[in-house]
Each structure stands twice: as structure tokens, then as C-alpha cells.
Image (cartoon, rainbow, N blue to C red; front, side):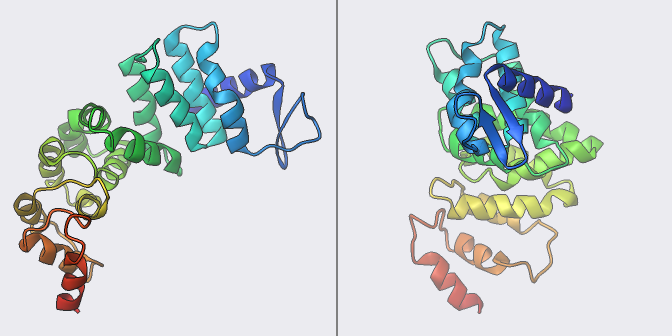
Length: 250
């Protein structure tokens, strides 16, 4: 299915006069100028949502373009379309697109970065976005343990720092039942403390941290336990706390 989406996007770009060459991309308008994937994304990704297609097919085409270009800007255009006067986009198609790519056996940095900075940092969308990509089916993920679903869970947990604690804490507790998710849970807790918009409740986070099955030599484990035990909830609200923890744990 992913390859079909890629080929559909490639055909669509060709219709716009854009084709891939060994060095990058070229357009019919300037055939002597090689373009990067980012330049192609900035110039053409938004046009997907002006196509004479059903909105769901526009979204699928945009995700195909994301697969083809592997560029974060495509996700920005998807978000812009969702927030536009013609939006919102169909939620089932939008979030199915994210879930499929989060489960892919390849690098999906553009997708996880999009979740982190666009959907999770925005508190008007973080709860629904987190639910769609993991919260709604975490029980199924933990019980069935399929590799694609576990890839998705690991990726979402790792970038979930900005999600409000009451939203993500039940999902964290469910993920706790599966030791394979403990390293990602730790990264989620660490990000919840260190991210500018990170959110956690120190006592609850410490209780979770103490139940993780991690090597005692895990980097930053002792420091995180120290700051949480001291009641600190965020690095930027307690700027000296981490340095104090580092000194105490060294």
C-alpha cells in the first residue's frame, strides 16, 4: 500500500512537471536546476489540497508525497490543510496515515518530529492526537505485541514529552505491563522533564520510573529519579535542578 502511495505521488509530481533524477529533482520550468526534496515539498506539497479530488484522496496523496520526499514540510502542509477554512481533514484518513507510517520498518523522523512539535506541543490538539496514534489502542498493542504496533508505540512514547500528564499517564501505565516498552517509556519520562513544553507530575512519574525494568547503568536514570524525588516537574521551571542532580549522582 505504501508503494502504491509513493507511485501515485510520483505520477502526480510528473503531472506538475517535476521528476526525480540521480542528483535530486528537476522541474520542466527550470530543467537545469537541481532541486532538493525540501524545495520540492515547499513548492508543490500544498498544491495537493487544491486538486480536484475527494478530500480523503487528497490526504492519501499528501502522505504518498511524504513517503516519496521524506520531508517534514509535507506534514506542515497537511496540518495547514487541517486548520484551513476547508478543514478539518477526515480524522480517520489523517490518523490512519500517521499510524501506518509510525509502524513502518524504516526511519520516520519527519513523522515523529511532526507529532512532537506540531500536534503534541499544541495543547489544543495533543490529547486527540495522542489518543489517535496510541492512547486509543494501547491495550491492544500490549496484548498482541505485533512488531509494527510496537514500533509505533515506541516512537510515540519517545516523543510524548509535551502531552499533558493526565492525558498520557494512563497510556504510560498500560505500557508499563510490557517490558519491551520500558526503554521508550523512560525516554518519554525524560523528555517530559527536559522538553520546553514537557509535562509530568513528579510523584506519579517517579512511581512509574521505579517500576521500569532498566539497567542500573542507564544514562540519566539516577539524575531523573533525583529531580523527580525532589518534586521538580520541568527542567525549564527548575533550571538548576538537573545540574544539582548530576553532582549528587556522580
